[in-house]
Length: 292
Image (cartoon, rainbow, N blue to C red):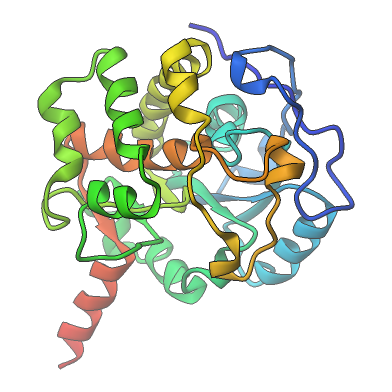
């Protein structure tokens, strides 16, 4: 299956949010030429993390915040209803061909506002830890919500209706009932992580983006999935000090479910494919125990 495309934002600079185009969720297609880096630039890189930016303001912030880290690559993405998930379905497949080499250990993403949500020095430590690079760990996850709740428990509390939508979508694209139910497992068994703050081994990432493209395509063309995705997610960005951009992005007074479905597909995929996941919380706990 080829890659699919959304209408992008009409403006990628100026306002913090950009302005989305109504109708994206229906599966309308428009090509968007991804930024293609000079392969020579990455020839020796062992870690490549794209820092996702939506406009000039967020790119300037990312450039400043991540300047000390040679693994960070600010990457502009258009503003679409899927937000950061667009990067994984539409841009990363091409970047995987140009941004990695046989020595690349980790590839993934953070957002420009990651310094507000997680410890970037600790992220750096994980990314550059030679023991981790040589280990059997497949995925590093950098942002954890409510660590004592399952992904389903937290999602149902934060976004009523989200888990039901995800279950319908995943079962419809051929996932097993057992795997879908695993989202309800204890977090010690199913490790939830959020916001597309993650890296994975390049070969595993290739598998993920191919699967994700198929799932998001279904979300955008299936009438029932569309109906479930366009309900109010109850998200309030003021909780994290953000601006409410729902009118700009979605042409609605609220955020629908699309971005929250997208960011939860990563932990679902990696868990159900038996990847070995290490979260930033576990890494910190391991450090603490070794220092005692």
